[in-house]
Length: 364
Figure 1 (cartoon, rainbow, N blue to C red):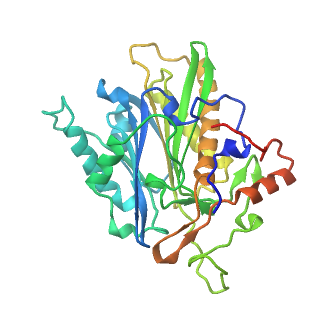
Figure 2: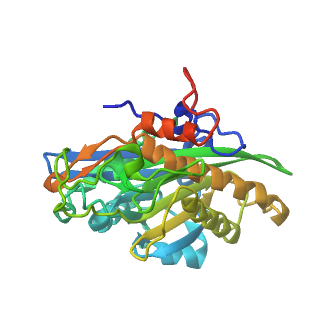
Figure 3: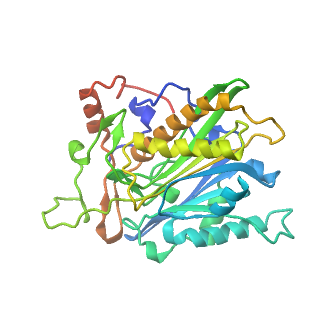
């Protein structure tokens, strides 16, 4: 089995803006990430991922914007986010049929926090993708304990990626995928601003890397529904995967309208890696800002660098979600194969992509 490697460890660098220290959403100060990965027997491959802004410990809400690329999915709490332009809870990701249990557990977590003893309302934000190809989704195995573990275990630094948390059973663009993250530092008239992205990848299309199409058959990855091996002409077609959730964090002082524009660019970035944006896909991006709200809002003339940052960071996060994933066998013997790094790099070299597969390359 190949070792999971991030895009930059393969020599694949997206765009020209610098990444943050960890090249992760956690490069935005105060943002932590936690996972609970649930693997049980041959049938359960699922979990929970929590994006936790520490600023919510001292502030009732953060400015936020939501963009819906295609609405075939669920985000609990989305209407209040759109109406008020803010989030008041961490953002949690999970599997489709576990969404509501996760939301209930998040409410429990929030009501137990100091200062909320008299609270009578809270708007949990929970999003999902369907991992039913590799996991028995109808079992709804996610419990309150799993959710609380993801929240309490959230840390800074480089989060785990690939087959972890809410990405344990997901697949994208014909390959095994999962959780990915990346960041960029943009220059504005008020100094540097960090944009961090975390994705839960589970959508269809043909993978593109550095503009090069990477169809599954070109890198020797078969279609399969049963355990690894030859696939006969009578085999069932593989479930294509559907949906993508993108969480964007920034320390720039943006209002809800500007954050909605930032979220929209994150959806656009899915096209860079080959999404076909099918009608059955739930493609959502949620952006929030951690800057103090008493600061003046960034002028529109300074938003373009942030647009570039979110496009680059989202593209790289999506690639990391694929390259850090490993081949997984799950429910009913279904298989999703990882992107084979060696064959990918060979294909990119054939297309004249410079810098890929550099020996000894180090970096985030």
